[in-house]
Image (tube, rainbow over all chains, first blue to last red; front, side):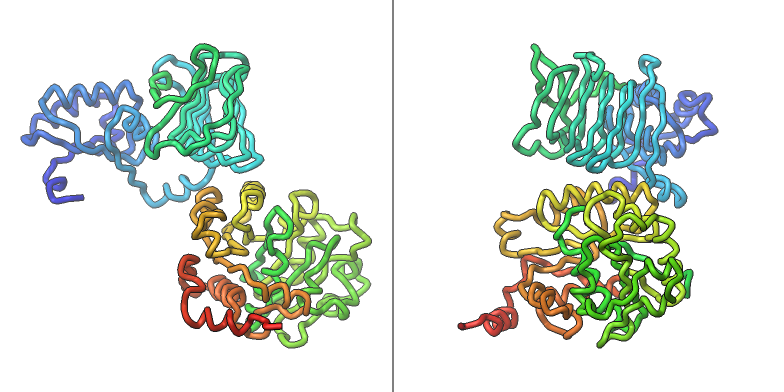
Length: 224
Length: 271
């Protein structure tokens, strides 16, 4: 962190402010004289909807958001998706947790549907299949396969096989931070993965356009 | 001693990448460092560990007889001639493939832990019954792979299976590294391999013709204290297992020094 970063004040919010989050934030903003602010969200589990509201409140006070830290991964994933720089810090007991695999079902705030969440890398020979949208935190190695009746979002590298819309939904998408699959399938369409390496740091998505699977820079709105 | 015994499975998935060679050389190297080491050949259908160690003609009993109580464990253990700290236990007779079950494996290993500080299990290739038996007794694992796509793919599969069997830590040994081919990008680089497998690298082993010579003689390279490239790599791995902090070799800098060139010249046979 450079010296100029240290001069930026930090607003801290945590679980105890959950019920009147925006009001507390509004009050705290009143005492800020700088035009940039860092946000520490501690253990708050926030959806994109609330985060957008937080950002609107901050911007209304003519202040720009600098960096956001939290120890909740999901909150930071939402923030990164909205394009804000984030910082994950972990308390000691969380290190063991982040290493181990886990999966579960989390709600998608925007439309009330459910998302299947899996943390951990799928290695060669391993399969993951679900009827819901799948959010995977980890890589899909060559030889592994992921299959969903809905969309697939991979917060990691896709180097195996992904099949979205396995029950025939042709509007399904496959999104990955590094899209380098062996094979892509959407609905009943099948495509081989691209030969060349994708540009690093650019998330891409695969979808069907005029009957063919194409790859383009990602627009992850359907998940948020 | 029993609770501190390190039970290390040496596996790869793919055959021929150097599991048995690594087991033999590590066994000797650890024994030379003065630790009581047992090597267990779990690949009893196609057993070669005894050949590599030069102990083939000394095998009288196997773990099978020990479990049937027709002999004592001490009788089945084959002590190495030059390295008395090392003992080999063949798991079974190549003609009796069906008898061994995961329970049996656990019982054998439990017996070995009473006498030894290290138990190295030489795992058979594949992920079928032989692998499952071997995994059931192991606490930690070393995955051996070569810088080839097929070997890395199989290693990845094996790592997934080790994870589901709660074997950890799992470390990686990259075998048969050819620095020149890596430099010219004809071979997967160290980064390519670790990028996919995402395991801590325990060591690299350089490709070395001396390995073939030593295998045929039944004298592992680490035994003669040879200074060949692979021998150095094997002893470094043994030291790292023991917790010594030895830096990994850099393949791009291997074989360029004057001593390396001289050694290569001296090993070249003129006629």
